[in-house]
Length: 115
Image (cartoon, rainbow, N blue to C red; front, side, top):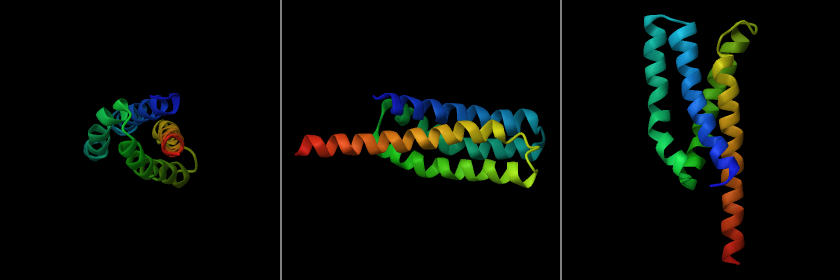
């Protein structure tokens, strides 16, 4: 697996940790914990195949990571930068960029091997 694939899997793992840091620890409430559990489910389902380097999973992850980036960006902008959602925004942004680069690189590599 390439460096972009490993960064994508690392970004997803850090995003999972960021969800729990933001909602489970910094914004501790019953609804925050429920939100952390609900937001963790798609990540927990994707993580094993992300670490294995499956192309389809990385393509799906680039789509799903935009939802996490949008959620964290909305929270940061809604609180004029005084939100703890930056704990999710940074790793989710890394996850999005790395999964996009990995997917594009793998598709180009597959196209070159077919020719």
